[in-house]
Length: 186
Image (tube, rainbow, N blue to C red; front, side):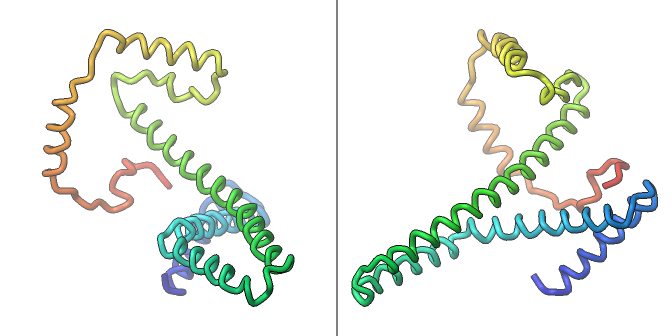
């Protein structure tokens, strides 16, 4: 990404935050906090994408190789071993929080998409939108009820492969991000 992309995005975020600020009469410090949270979320997502790439994996392999090759030069002493142990511990510690942040965000996005599908489907039970407020025992009972609905039915695997072939032949149309909002504000 270019520096200008971040500047444009920051300007858009400031504009959106200013609208929220004016609509809700929020304090300036709250607005700054929201901007910082959005920047942090974007940073975590970018870092997570980078950390999960094959280039990063190859870089890690190369660094471990260089470290291993320097072993004879440093006579495999304690400091040489401490470097890799400390480095991996720090990286692992930070990656736990990075991965958790990214997973939480992805989980929230997935739940919102599913909630919208439930809301938009006429035959769906809108009560399922509040499953996150139920206890574990109630969720198990509900899962058993849904499982019993499909107990006597069998999955036809022949149909699944036909559906995959049909869906592979349908061209995908690109949509603008605002086209599916249905009048809803971001």
